[in-house]
Image: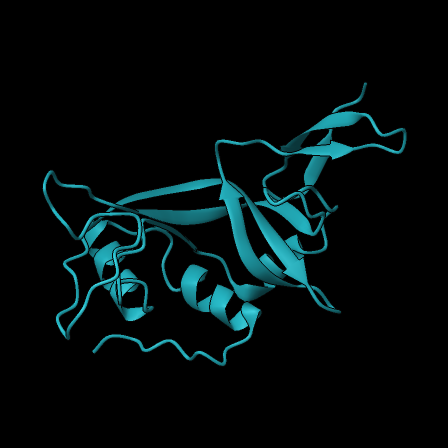
Length: 171
């Protein structure tokens, strides 16, 4: 039976439902197909891309205490860390109407969503809110290395240690 999202859930609860699974260290294609369905991301349409973080909630919450960096939406409530993840990408097949970005389907038949998995340890950027801050949005992972601005306003490349903390390059 598929997970029915609770529409009154908080932004943190939604983040946890869509992005956190500490029970495994990485997943395969079958993992993605099952998790995307049971976590409510295949109805009423197939979500194009989703990342599951395989760390305990304490480790993820600790990312919220790292220095603020700019999110994709230019807000400054994002934070970076290194975590184990499985990225689930919708497999696009030619002439398959179920494989658009987020197809809205009519009727009672769920779309056939098939996902390809890629498990790795990589940098992620999450948005946090509240006091104490908790994760509320998965901003990005991997390819875009964030920068931090030092006291003078200059951008400083960001590197991560194995614990997910930012190491600033000396200029």
